Length: 308
Image 1 (tube, rainbow, N blue to C red):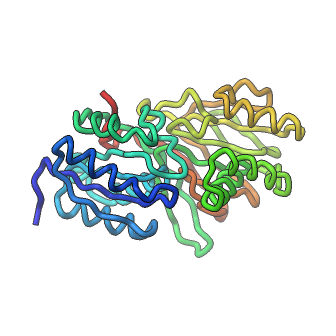
Image 2 (cartoon, rainbow, N blue to C red):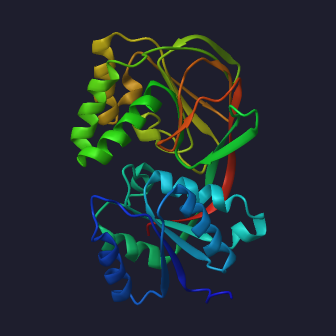
């Protein structure tokens, strides 16, 4: 049975570091007299199942309480629906994950639930772009995955995967980053890539590539998720000290100032070859696609709730 149009569906993705977050969010919603129903996920598979349930039960406002990966699961589930269905649904976020880069882009901050809910209540909608990576998996199946933030290929995908794993164990963002940097020393630092971007062809060893519709975890600081374009940062070979200098620029928001970083803006990236390079999508490891793959952008396809 369809629910009232004003009623929110809240998809809660638990964060082990903050077990009381759900109670706080419910208290704030009740104080604002928001009508809502809460469902709680247990895994990425359950996010998709619950998101499908919320859509098919007629919720027009769906709020994801989670990080970039949870948002990614929700968006990919939403994109399976017909355009007419998608256009009637507004997606929002209350950041509660290991990585909350897309939420931070809009100034939604972890822990500031009151401000976030106040903004969501005003229901200001912006159509946002989605990037999409189309690839072949190890079974030979033709696959695709949408992303709100970015695709990382190479070293940063490796570091992001390490950071997620270490933070789930250590809890601290800073400590997990430091440990990830240390572990990075023992990982492959360069990958043979053949990439086509606009009229340029890159056929050489590359440390990492970020293709982004959003902030890209600091690697594409000029990207905006509503201009129908992808920002690309390619990082060529750098000495060990330059790597750490580049990571410092990444943390401080000056990544494009590093001399080994080569930025592009495009609508399509063709990866002809990227041997052994891991691929991460919105902070989650996709693995290593088989053969070539393409990364493109679809303009203004999701209704996203943004601050006032």
